Length: 301
Image (cartoon, rainbow, N blue to C red; front, side):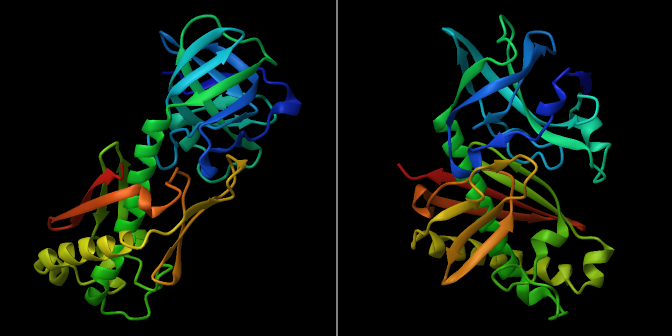
C-alpha cells in the first residue's frame, strides 16, 4: 500500500473536502479532482465534496462507508474510504502512517476524503459524479457509535465514586472524565463497540483508585447498563455540528440527557434520535492495568 503519492491536483483545488455525512447525508454529488489506480484491483478518487465518511488516520474507530459511485452510465463499487492529507504547495497526498507521521504540525496540509473504488474505467478530472452510501450499513454504524458515547458517559458516572480527587475536571454531565483520560483504543463495528482503557501511573496520580473499582466491577457494570436504559426510555435528538463542513473542521456531538446537554468532539456518524436504538448491553472486564468495555447494540426496527 502506497502511503504517499503525487496527485497533480491543480493548486486552486488543493483544499479540504466539503463533507455532508455529519448531518446524516447518504447521497451527494462531487466534482472529480483526482482519479488514478492504487493497490491491485482498486483506484482512488478525490472530489471537492462527498457524503462519505472515511476511516480516520488519527483515530480509526469507525470504519469507512461503502456504496456506489456513478457517472455517465458507469458504476464503480465504493469499497473503502480514507482520510488523507494533501500538501497544498505540491499536491502530494499522504495516507495512513505517512499522514500520522506529520503529527499535529500540519500547516499547509488539507484534509481530504480518498474514495477507494473497484478498478476499471475512471472518471475524467472535472466530471460530476454521484455518490451513494450504503444507507443500512451507515445506520447500523451510527447507532453503535452513538451507543458508544452513551456508554462512555455512563461509565464516567458509574466510576465517579472511585476518584479520591473531587477537583478532577468533569465531562459535560459533571462526572470525572475517566474516558478522556484513560482510553487507548476504540473500535466501532456493525453489532457493537469495544473500548480499551489503560490504568497507568498518571491516572492513579490524578486520584483514580482502580483497585476499588475493579473489586466493585459487577456493580459498576450494572449501573452503566441501568443508566443507558434510562436514557433510551426518553428518546432525545442527537446532532453533530456543523452538519455540513470541511473535513478539517472539528465537529461536536450533542444530545440532551436528563435535562443537560451532553457533548463531545467526534468525527464519526450518529443517529438522529435515541429512539433509533432499541437496547444496549455493556460488559466490563479488568486486568491489572487495563479496563475493557464492550457494548452490544440493537437498532430499533
